[in-house]
Image (cartoon, rainbow, N blue to C red; front, side, top):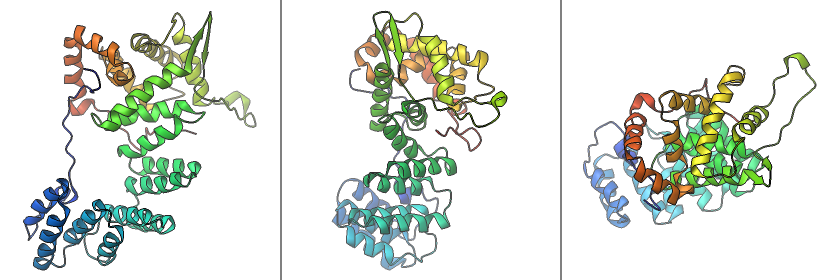
Length: 352
């Protein structure tokens, strides 16, 4: 079991032409796309150029040629391909994503951002374009703008996982690790069984372990800084989520001596009981609500084991060997579409 995430869903990485629900005049485009996946870029380009002759008004062929050039790291050729088809009918958001990325690859971040913004005028709900803007800002060490871009991407496209992934990495490396924990858990639920999922699984566990410290008879929690604005109506003062989370976590840690996979699951189970007793109505949170759904289904402990498995692989392996029936029950529930975590514009979590 070591070094491998429990797999129970099949993810298909669909190339652009397969995602398009339409027929192509040149059916060889599917063969060309397969060749790109296999790293046979020149063969693919040759086929696609013939396809382009068959149907010169379809943007898919030159787009795939540009994609092949991008994989070959011939970025200027990719840009030339894409610029010549900018006014073609049927252009989608991924066109601006690929074009902007290539401008970034040739060290022209200003043009890259302008390209993403041009795409957002046409596709305002394209979370992937906000993602790419954020990546450029991040490469310039402009982390504030990067986070704002990722969060805007979450707002317009709440189920697109990559904005949560990038935000998780930034926040877990900041003073506001709580936001990283929230975004990371959302990400693991939206994008399952990938290498990125494994990375976040390990980071989430290690963040809890490093942020909840036990020494002698004392316990210290360091996940975020509590900032309270006292300028408003004190009677209707709403505490920051950090304060609410910290209060309930402190209560839930009582009686524990260390952080292990088992104790962390116990802490999170106690947390849900405490949080939903007093605070959920005034301080709703989509991640914690999903945990409550799992708790009510009798699956929260198994979910916790699954979620953090890459951070404590030996412990998880032992648990899994002894609890295969529990895991099978969890997998059956968790993979049912109606039980998936659903992020909407109404329940979206955004860190302050």
